[in-house]
Length: 205
Image (cartoon, rainbow, N blue to C red; front, top):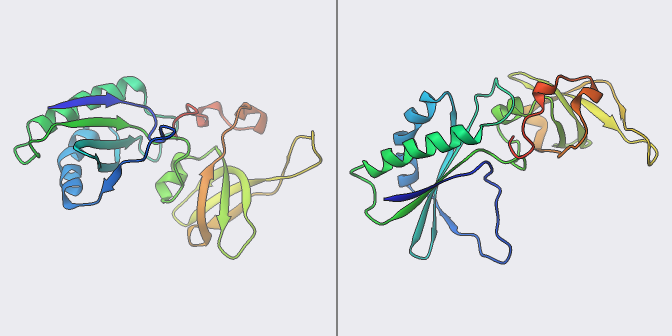
C-alpha cells in the first residue's frame, strides 16, 4: 500500500536534512513502462520515475509534464487525479516489492535545468540564462524553438535603475548550448510584447 502525495514542484528540499539516495536500477525503468500509458491517457508526458531510499523508507517519485507544444503548468487537480490512478496501478502490480512505499507525483519546478529540446519548447516565452559552449553566455527571452535550436531576444545590460534593452534575436543551435535555466520573473510579460499565455504558474515550468 502507498501514501500518495500530490505536489506541484519537484524542487523541494528540507534544510538540514540529507537528501535520500536515488537508486538507479531496472525497477525504475520497469515502473516507467507500467505507468506511462496511464500518464499518456491524461495527455501528459512522463518526465521521470525515480525510487528514493532513506533507511527502510522507499519513495516512488513520478514527474509528469504537459506536452511540449503547450505552455503553462500542470494543475493541482490533475496532479491529484493522476496520483490516485497511479497509486492504484502500483497497488495492483504483482511484481511490486511487498515493502510499503510512498508515492509522490509532481510537475517540474521552475528550477528544472533546460537539458532536452522539449524543455526549451515548454519554456518558450520565458526569460532564460544560457551557458554557451565556446561563446559568450546569453540572457534573454525565448522567442521560438525548432528542431535545430533556440531563438532568443537577448537582454542588454544598461545603467542601474534603467530598464534593460532588448537586442536583435539570435539563434543558438542545441549543440552550442551547454546548459540553460529559467529566470524567475515578477514583471508582466505583456511589457515585453509577448502574450500572457506564455507565463504559466511561477512554480511550474
